[in-house]
Length: 275
Image (cartoon, rainbow, N blue to C red):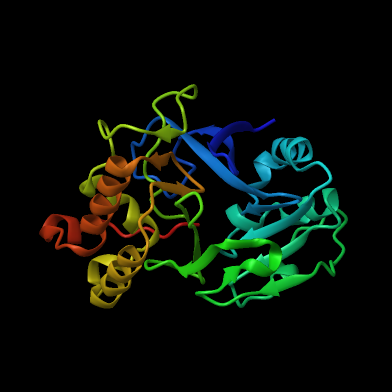
């Protein structure tokens, strides 16, 4: 079973913990500790929606936990991206929950990417949404789709105005656990990742960042956070950031890491793509 953490009266996180080592390519060399892998289940009466499906390593624990949490309610699966940490378990999930429906704002035909247990194709209903849409037609009018400002492969963030949680998929994902028994929710700013570490993590994936003109991305970032005021940041990797002070500091540290001049030494840092 995955670890269950209730973030709001309508929202739980499903978490599995992985020790960090050199095989995990999005960490900077020498990173230590434990990485939470999170999926989020949002409830609204007889409907629930799961944000991303986790990695194949955790399929059994995720499915077992969902069976307990979902019950007879209608399940929707939301894909923030087409990378395997988001959709790699969708084949298994659809086999376990054959009445589930898929929702995404990604234009790529997702079903062709699923790993079905019997290697068959699937005719699961997939609804493609647009940035700015809400999920009202699925019973979640309080959830709106935003485009992730710094992104690859088509990335959507979800904003739940009811809980004021911002679901950020693979961003705000640099805060790890010192041990596997710590809470996945950070409520105090002491020990938060600082801009230098965040920047070094960012360029593991966004290896074009040191040479990029980020003014347009920064404009979109500023517009997003002028429009919403989250009290919780919920990534699929790393700790959840909770509380006005922690969230404000996390947003500022990531803004500095993403858009401010990092200096000659940082600009010369090796650019390594995630595999």
